[in-house]
Length: 274
Image (cartoon, rainbow, N blue to C red):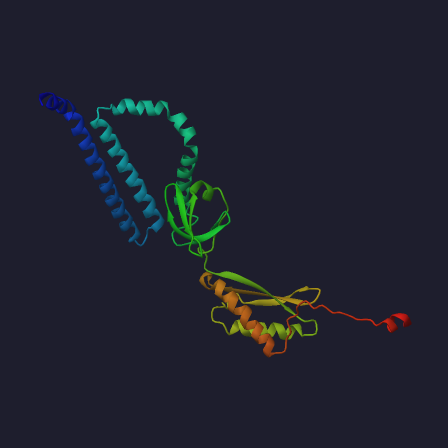
């Protein structure tokens, strides 16, 4: 019994250090999360500061607090932090080479926050991936596609690719092509198209809509319509204009050509006469 108590007494300092370390870590995670949440809410609710900056600042503060907690935990176990920092400094080249992809994501995340090619809620196309920006972290950007698929994209890929922002504009142009039969009057067809456009309040008057003959195809005269609208109306407006113009063409006797196959049968008598 005395031997067991002696062993427990020998391990008591270590057990105390482990207990303190666990408490420090739990407190560190709790405090860092609460502080990050507080900073994020304060910045998000500020009318002059972008929401993207709030998430970024909250992430930076959270990781800084966790770094200090990690240093404190190491000190509990007797590690000389100054010596550890010196060792890490000597090994920084190797660590940098091993983590160059992660460091590139971090640097790209900083650039995205500074130049802000997109922000939370923007509808973007990044490297061929289209979706709504849900979050911008230190290392990744999260997108939500129109069919509600979650996309996680490294910031280095985002910053190093072509970024198309469909939200950060006030107007957008919709281009539609309508084919009519050669027997139809192009001027009449263009007036019918403009009547449909003018009846839709989503179509902007400035810039004014434009329609004209842009191609003489094999079986149709192609009319191109260019109309401006708000970005939020673009997709649905295109669909509605296609449908409404089709109905208007039918009502005005304007034919939309489609491929035909003509079969000619020649009798034997006609072949003999030829």
